[in-house]
Image (tube, helix red, strand yellow):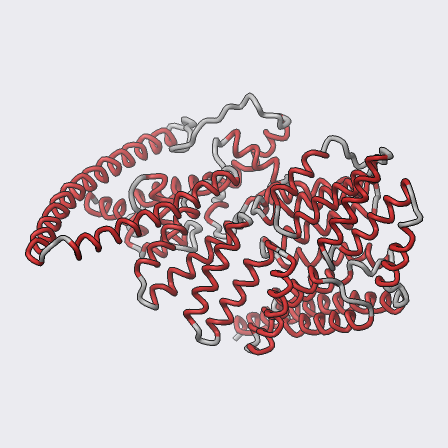
Length: 607
């Protein structure tokens, strides 16, 4: 009875704490929306169309720096409404700035050029512009332009899946803003980090950074960016499970559109897409379709290429919900094509996995294999750079095409040249040949597995003997790295290694949720330093390092604990930190060369 009372108290406190935190979060969001509404009421008369007309009339009578600044403002006002007009104003501003050697005007025009490329999905050319000016622009002389360049750089890294670079760029910007007490740089740093955490699906942190950036916008009484911020608040609220709050925020957004002005197709396209996603999850399919159609129309008209894959993804999900499987399949295929155009390989990976299941349901094994080839090409490759990613995708496509052509050729040959008897004989001979080679391959495979198993056992015995004698040894299969490029302070490195060793002894790695950021927090260091130490001192990247620790620990336990190896393979996998059996099998085979089931079977046979 006493025990039950304690449980009840614990559950009550947990529920109360959760409810209180939810209330605090909702109160915080409502407070920000109220502040935005107050800002709108104060700036209602700041009509952007009036501002555009005023600037347009002023530019014809202006010259020099004044003209360049006016043209840059017009580009800024048009960039979310009409990209072609924005480009023309920016081109003119750049020409004027170059004629009079107006450096700040040149840099702002180059930033606009990079940003306009970015919002149309041309990440590579955008990054080329940024890289070309990195040495020329510093935060002391051009703080705002520097912050804008670094923010877009972080956003490009995030969109391309280079998350370590995105985080490093955002945190560097945050450090500079705090050291210089520059509020504009601070707002840009929070914008970059919000984008980063959104892509990593850490919606709570994304929302926190979004609201911190919004503080600066409200204090500056600049209503130009509030539409994006309301959209971000709504989207993150939905992802955090509060769809009611999300829809309230979107209703507030629609109210802003009426009271202020249209924010432009670039912002509207993503807002309508996000609204469609929420209505889809609520089962309001007609409303979802209406907003999605408007979004896709804007995306196609303005060539917002990096928005297209996700819009098509939502459209495909809508087709599935309304039981139109064939349209869903075609739309997922279109989403893959759109993702290839902007090198969004994570979308290709997720879509090909979905298509494998859909093609299996409609009885198309050939298409299942095609998408499996594509999925495996991305999943099994250790990409070092975007060029390697592109090569892998192209190679996978080429193999799929060649396999299809070979199949067509065989079918034509069978129809036109072979009689029924010849076909039967050929099939029988093929079966015999395949069977013979299959038997040979199987025998070789079994022998190879035995050799690998025996080598693994011998290595384990050597390792255990060394441990009993307190002889330090390196973990199995760890590659040594050239340490001549180590720039990390030796004292810092020593402290990290000492703490890391202690955590290894405490088996931190069997926690399924362990990751680089969580581990760096435990070690009281930053992810960059920890990653350097693991790369240099452990000779491995973080994922391989964790897998190495888990498999080493598992091998020893399997050999020593007979009862443990009698457990189900899924239990064994989860007990050392793997939530997915396939991931566990792949990690074990990659390191040992054999499957864990075979290794355990041989251990039991020899017991």
